[in-house]
Length: 222
Image (tube, rainbow, N blue to C red; front, side):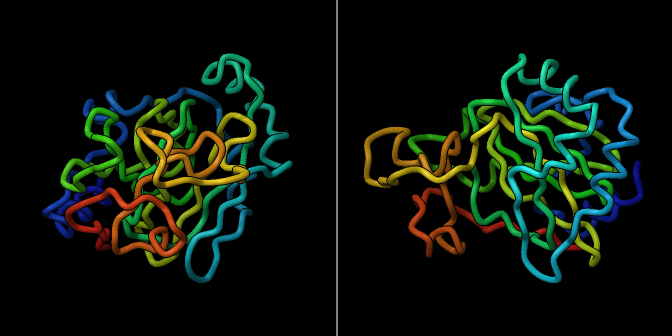
């Protein structure tokens, strides 16, 4: 067993923790085989903030990496894509979102993804006990399947994390309006191609997001 995963399991006994290389990940996504050297170089120079997280949806230097053309076809069927990053030092669940397209993630630092399957969401409500953690080792490229719930990664060291985020172009852009009282799925629509539900103990609640996560606001210990 990877020594990092072993440490994480010992320090987080109440959380189901796996590696993206384990069979359990196959319901949530898949590992993509690719030569990632140029991607590693591009991600290694992205800034990790001193505190909190920083998300940039579109970064020209990442979108110019030749591998992106292949990924655009392999994971998005040729749809236009954007490549950016979410870097930071976060370690809490706080919220869960999903997109109706795949999301690609890659890191040169390693991190943990907190994920939940779509069938665990009931009218915008989710029990955090249905969330599992997946360790993403450094320099492993993964596809998170459409509708699988996720949010910002969790750091696995005091140095923080970097995380490539590739999505269909326009995802996470602001909407003209948000209505968390709307019927059905619409109440979760927070940004373009982004449906979100949050924990009552989260910054997202303070911003007006739909509150639908019950149970513990998971905090990854390291």
